Image 1 (spheres, one colour):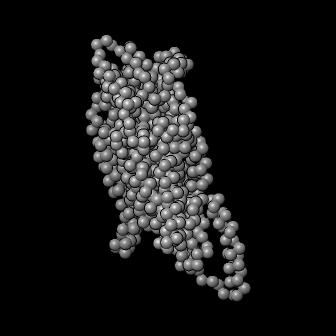
Image 2 (cartoon, rainbow, N blue to C red; image 1 turned 120 degrees about the horizontal axis):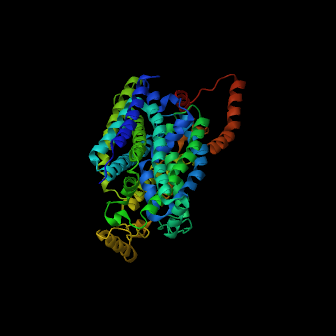
Length: 599
């Protein structure tokens, strides 16, 4: 097994030291992370550029570099169509969803659910998010450890601990400002890792046309699958409809992303950051897809998995680096640094968001309920840093469990679909349906989560069958027992019958979760209201249920509700002036105005 040279280790060390140095810098400059707002939301003073890069880097990490490249290497280019869903979904997030959160200006997006439905809904959604992030963080830390093991033989335990410790250090010490600034240079290193693969293959192939020709001749170029069969893994419908639901679940209502958008100065800046994130995101996605074709060109006559050189195709990209870049001083180190940075940016973001959610949704309400007091800002800041340390340690522990997970890309997107889809449906129900109530919303969420976990983790599932791989150019002294096993698996898929729901493409999980929560919650709300088991009184400012808190709804609906109530507000004000007596504000209205003033 090849090893990294001295210059490779030097580059990797410098990258890690810079991340640590940024954390130390923001600990001792500016506000010195002395307030909770500065620590969790960067004082709402960040520029558009760091936030735009951070939005991309938070989720498109080592999963993208290793997973997407192998998706195209093994199954073809159909996955790339998902980029169209990013384009279609960005205006929905920017102009419908984000304005609702920005008006509230809260550290936790789940506070919206308490204002709209009640604390029970907030707690259910927050716990779901926490579970989602804890599962995801294990895969993200495991990815660079996998890369280093394949490239250098470096112990996985050591790699996992290094990633976990470094990102926990600078995220805990420097707060949100350190996380956002490190994301910029870490994003650039991610691009450098991907383009180093493309350029190296380009040089060896002689032209990009040759790489494309080989991919086309061997069935890797496939953009024509318009099947409506939900059991087809990737089609135009799965990528656009399923991709849109996944994108909105991440960039619309996910705490990690919304927390970044709340760190800018204004709503227009938040929208601009989301729009600038789009080309950065698509460029990384498309270039990573093409890197998979580049790697296929190099191994077209001898697949490393069938040859027995690697244990998983997620290790093929690091192996390509060893085979092609070993003669170039420092280039392998640059690639490994890019993989490291991809995970550092994501883990630091997850740590920050989990600390915010735990503090705002669990700890503060618990102290208020049990001790009958509120935490001071100094206490809140101390707890935030302590929670960051805790979740940093937890992510290291979860990484050791990620080795049992299959393909990195499918595992990551499955997690976001299974939990993110139902959460998207819950927020959409609250923002669009005025008659929705708490019991209906929670009922819809729980039914959707149960269904998505069932189809997502239910067994047995049919094994994935890749496109044809060749061993014609492999050394004659190699054994190809794995090739026989893969052919047997392919025959098994064709002959054995699997339960239909277990065969549904993982790309539909988010869309199905969204639909079940939204329509199920709507139907249950109507039923509970009909039976007088619940109502939607929380959306009203007054006890007579005439003045709606329109800020709880998406801008088009909020404006319509505002216009509908305008005559009532004018008459009420005029009658008070004519009578010479000022009408007393009601308790619900006082609480709502008080919340807006604090925010």
